[in-house]
Length: 327
Image 1: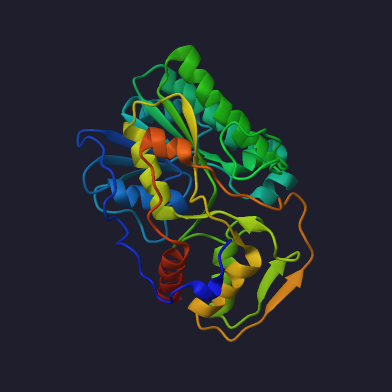
Image 2: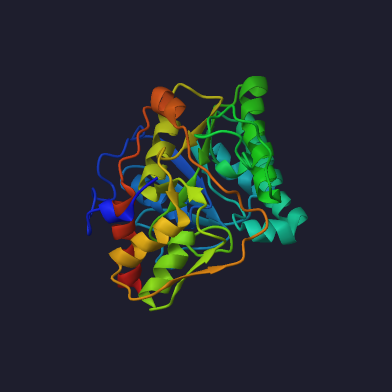
């Protein structure tokens, strides 16, 4: 784990699109959920050199980069989805109801988007020569039996969201094995960065940053000894671009840093980097939360040539700077 006192303040890290892998310039890209947190970063990386279409029920507040097409549609609308998948060489499937608390309250509704929508997409790709890069999640593992977590770790999700992602993840493998669809599933650990929203179960960094910048105490659920593997959104984009070009298809890969930090350490680090004169306070634990999580991403390193490049402090510096500028 990381000692916040050992960190250097104001580390900036590389520029947001520095040294990112590239697709074939002729590739046509469909980004479902391309108006969301991860999707907008992915679209920004792809837009300068590719034909990109965003397929989403919403539009980003700041719009898309020049040249990006947008279709306002739902992944459950199979007839519309089929037309756009047919025109794409690669689909980055980010569309999901990523609010874990909503999946607990309304599991049938989130199932329709997170699982049925993914299955519909795979069916569309089955009829075309289209690769699917699927945004899976570390939520599929549930409470870990051992750390770090590798891909063959037992999978016992603790929320409907985790179960939906697990089933969709397995469908990507099945469609590769059964129908020769080129699929890659990326099991994201705790992604953070500019533009991330704050939810009940995700976006703890966004929550802490917003509290710190507003001069509010940082609220930690439980004792704060929970550990997480936080991976900057730029590295998630990097993994997606590598997955779009790899020959190692029909596989699932963990995407994390391999380093853990306690939530209490994280709160202290954000307080220091933001120069906030606030306290860290504790509230009750939450249902469905796991105690510890850290990725073993060695398979992605071997097969995809993936390696995270943005340290936690560098990513936090950039995230804090973005929220300061956007206020």
